[in-house]
Amino acid sequence: MAGDSRVLGIVLAGGEGKRLWPLTEDRAKPAVPFGGNYRLIDFVLSNLANGGYLRLCVLTQYKSHSLDRHITTTWRMSTVLGNYVTPVPAQQRLGPRWFTGSADAIYQSLNLVYDDAPDHVVVFGADHVYRMDPRQMVQQHIDSGAGVTVAGIRVPRSDASQFGVIDTDAEGRIERFLEKPSDAPGLPDSQDEVFASMGNYVFTTEALLDALRADAADEDSLHDMGGDIIPMLTSSGAARVYDFKDNVVPGETERDRGYWRDVGTLDTYYDAHADLVSVHPIFNLYNRRWPIFTNPPQLPPAKFVEGGSTRDSIVGAGVIISGGNVSGSVISPGCRLAAGCDVVDSVLMDNVTVGAGAVIRRAILDKNVVIAPGARIGVDPVRDAERYHMSPGGVVVLGKGAVALAD
Image (cartoon, rainbow, N blue to C red; front, side):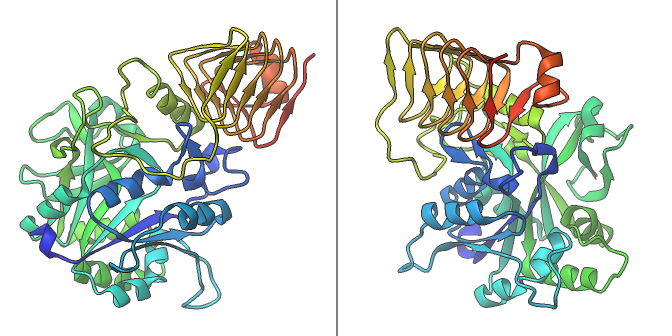
């Protein structure tokens, strides 16, 4: 049984996050703020912690200071019970080189596995927004006798070219991996769907160690978990798929069951925020039976004065809206919105200042951005493209500490 097995959790948090620039200009991708109070890494750590997996190693690399600080100040476990969440930077244990891929990151950190001596190793990515009970995946893995189990989410076959696709037989055995295929085969029980890899894996420790050692000896390998390790185990018949639709999370609603978003681009990051703010949200942050944990800021409650109003939005602690109007937006802690401003369908991170009469439409404003009185963001696409960064989907993005002036 899963509860009788010793499980070590490894979270891969070393991604550079180039497609999220400028939000990753000064921080690692898993440290990017999300949903007002959270960082992206809080979602995977919350899933593992809620599932009872409380010995977690977070492998970091690029621009990791804010990520390391968040983990060490937020994710404190009971040392009396032997639990921990610890950031593990690239340490050059095997020579003067950094991690060359996600598999190499684990290979260079195998001392963590040797020290813990687990029966199974859960390897999850750090930059997805979702709820998942990992115990159910571990139990299937144990019952199947597989060397590795890969979490797969069903997506329309027409969208297969956007994902790494898992091709399986009718018994759930993985037969091959297809990287963004143009014509992927459908599932045995649903020809109009395919399995997209979620980047979450459960390994039997022996299978993981053998695969990592073989991969490290292969000079032609890219040392990637999804691109090299899983295909290696697939070719030996040791890989199985876990169907995410079978996962049941306490407190979930029919509307948000099975929700998973890879927020690897500015547009998907923006769209995931839009999923939060409807009356009946597609992703429900308010599920008390499976909470998303973080370190909330020590700030007073939000305040609306001089006719300030908001509609269909999330407003964080310490926000003051003085006569401004907000709709369809996420306003993070400490923001200040002045009289006559109008913020629509936007994401404002911590401590953004919006001046009187300013207009903001379909924008992402990173921490400490200042919007001058009368400035207009997201109104004139040609002008915005000349001054600011714009996503392929037309979302205007201002990096940390940027200042936007009026014409």
